[in-house]
Amino acid sequence: MAGRSSGTDKLIRSVLIPYKKGLLISAFSKEYRGTVGRDVPFRQMGFPSLQRYLQSMPEVCIVETLGSGETLVRAVPDQSTEQLTRMIEKQKISSTGYNRRTFEALKNEGLVGDTSTAEERQLPVPDNVKDRIKSLLAKSKDGLTPLELKSTFLQTFKCSINFKKYGFTDMNDFCVNGLTDQCFVIGHKTVSLKPAKSTTNTPLPIPDFIVEKIGWVLASNPRGVQDSEFNTVLRRNCGFVLDPIDYNYLSMRSLLSHNKHVFYVDHNWRVYNPRKTKIDRSRVYDHSMSVMGALCVGKVYPVVWSVMCGPNFFWFLPSESLEELDQLTTDMNSYYGEQQAGLEIRAQYVDKENIVVVKAVVNYCRGRVLEIEEDKYYVLLLDSGDTQWFDRVYYIKSPFLRLPFVAVKSRIRAANRCVSYSTEEKDKFKICVREVAKKDSLAVRIVEAREDKVIIDLLDVADDLKDIGETIIKTF
Image (cartoon, rainbow, N blue to C red):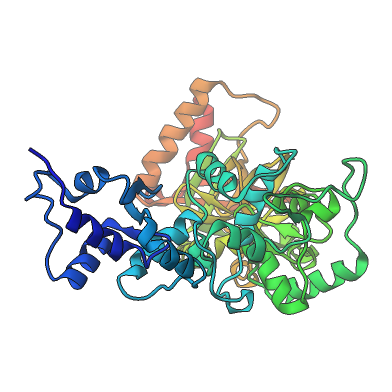
């Protein structure tokens, strides 16, 4: 049957009394062993665990479970220890010895304060954490206590505020010394948002002198700055931060996306100087940039077919350009595979006829913008003749424009341009062309060169340059 010993009770109280905030049960066990020279005899007293034994003596100690799941034990003073207890209450809590783990646990619970100064902080609170806190406070008229903020943050974003990571000992310390932006109001027990300067929700313009400084900072970072790090970079270079609340925005992303004359933001929320990211006029399509301009009338060129829509609409690639095109594709895949985050262009900076880069299934390709609908782009692939809708387009670097665009649009001379060929006739044409292409004997003779296409005779090199285009069309 479980029992108690008055001598053991006194020893337990005497071990705990010096620690006014208590000890974790594991730290208490070590402290008891170090002081008395033996373990707490809970088994001899008939208890299955130390915790159950301590819980049986509420007049000696209080046992409680912390939010972390750890067990804390605190002494209950009696008449013989009252004076000693009052003296200990005036002492500063130490973080050394067996008390170190307890101290860390109490910091995490917000039960002890910090012993360092705000100037000793190692890391600023990230902007994305502040933005999340602002969104929570915006929904609370009366603000939130530090512990309410901690729990609400965890419930909403499924992650905790890691105040220790930023150099703070508890949530009180985090709010007072970490949330130093002008938009935060730190009250006696709560933290809240400062009311917007305007009585309406109309966004306020960013002053010109601030716009100028921001432009300089972004121009100094040509690879862009991640939105969550923007204020950190701004503070380091200019000594101030851009607070969305000051301009009637609830978040940094909202401010960034609504001030397009100040910021260019790509799909991954990297921020750039907009004047450095617009497509310049040299990136506008011109027919002279195509290999078509180098084709000579009357000359025969071995080709591979690319897009076949019938005798009136046929795209081919000159075989002599294929090796260079393969190397260009390899180079573009390597470059844009690594750099695409800094080269994406948003719709407001793209016009029709701009030359861009797109990712078509596997490879990055050169393209010409034909249509723009919201954030989608209808693009002609300039090295194949295919057309597709894309969600993203990328800035094309000058080295990738040295090779003329390889795809050539053409019409078979024997075809009647006023005739709309049937599906059956188009399929018959495609089958015949593919059979010749399998023998690597497909060629074209340039009959006439126009601005946007060439008129050709479609030939079979293996059959004495037989005009297969005319032969096929005669069967229709």
